[in-house]
Length: 133
Image (cartoon, rainbow, N blue to C red; front, side, top):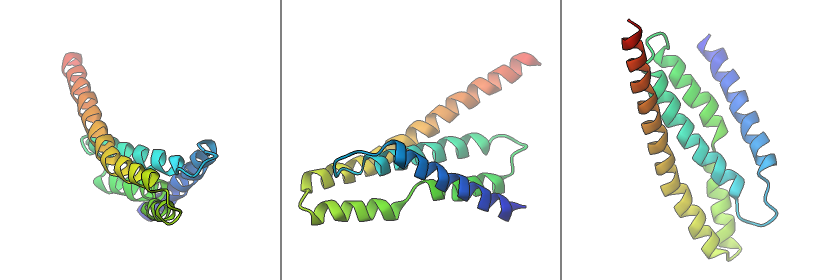
């Protein structure tokens, strides 16, 4: 069952990535689509794993399958590396530096935002449950 979910989440992540890359297509050489997809992936992974791990009915294995399957196939380090190298090879040093910095620090910021937002929602959920008793 878990293997089938891993495959399903992997397919959904890859299709989502491809679809977004078609929507975000930019006519110039800056890899905006990959940057947005990877930052969104950082946010999603932090938010969803933090949120789901605190729901008693959700298996930690399912959370790991979501992270590995969906987010793992949605984001891509290899494309980021190749696009960075291509910018450097084509003498677009400023764009390469911006891309590298935005990817690194932006990924950390997106993860922190996802983590904090899930914490806020969890606190609100717990308060709601206490008031319902």
